[in-house]
Image (cartoon, rainbow, N blue to C red; front, top):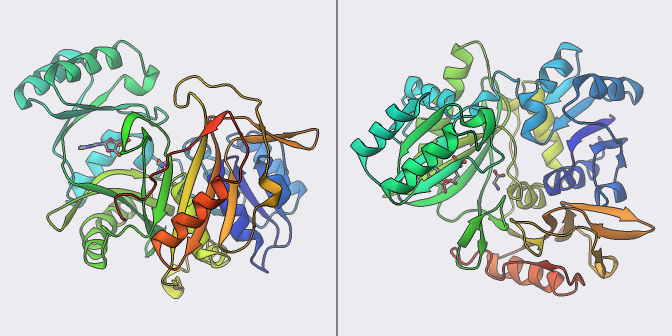
Length: 420
Ligand code: AMP
Ligand code: GLY
């Protein structure tokens, strides 16, 4: 079977790494890919959100299965176009991708599904939003309704901060994403991510993870796309996972099917856990990045079988086989990230690192130039290791980090501290 993966980050490198190990995979193409991906797959320079270009590539390369990594092609309806053309596709329809693309849509689904989540109000004008903030007080959470590249959420510790966030959003800071806002009750607790595959009717758990969103050690400083992650998440015990499945995820899937927009693909539930009970923070309609890197490290080649069963509506007949192992990924980012940073620094030492089922450096933002690997993004490498214990996995990930020679990069030295 020829397989196409859409995307260009560390998540897609990890997906490609797992898929390429499966004997079912004949030719693997990633579009557009990056320098690391090009070492294990063919890269095609097309825009993954351009459905017509994707369909042309699928026809030209006799692709039998497409895996969609990021949210933008999903929200743009690329999965719909592929399914309409009869191509087996892993990823939700644009209608189902609203679970990530619109916060008010998700709150509405949670209401109908009676899924536990934060109390909220939905506003299309600033005065009503400010009245709600004054009535409820701080801390309170202000969210741009639409996709804002992870930057549309302000956890306000004071009323003033929340009111300023309203002015920014209705003032156009987040473009159309901020034309509507959701204001939520601030939830306390520990956050963890739960990943499940859904084929429209059945659900299969494929792992838990925790990431580190803040740039600084001890989880301080500005938010990023994620500076590191580990799997499993100890806080997401079997008991909590069962509660999340029964009270949050299955009712959501049933509600999506009832609306005529069944959910097919991976569903990433961000949970807030307190006093033994999970509440939903948000849904994403894709694997997390860098959470996918630790999940793929643990799942290996079977990830392809599971994604294919999901896309073919056969989830009820498959199982995920788990080893009692742990994985850790450490993100190497360019100095200055998540603010301004320079591109173009040369990264050395990668060739001397092990690449096997326990050690892998996934590329997130790199390109190759004259045979050299060059930094080409904010988050650049995901140094990932698997071990019998979390400590073992983490020690081996940092041992690899220490062999990478990239003076313009940095990483957090405390990934997984909460779990250790
Ligand atoms: P989101 O994009 O909705 O995941 O929000 C980004 C981050 O903001 C989450 O991962 C949480 O850390 C935080 N957050 C969002 N909503 C809430 C809430 N209602 N209570 C507390 N923290 C929240
Ligand atoms: N690491 C968080 C995300 O992928 O949304």
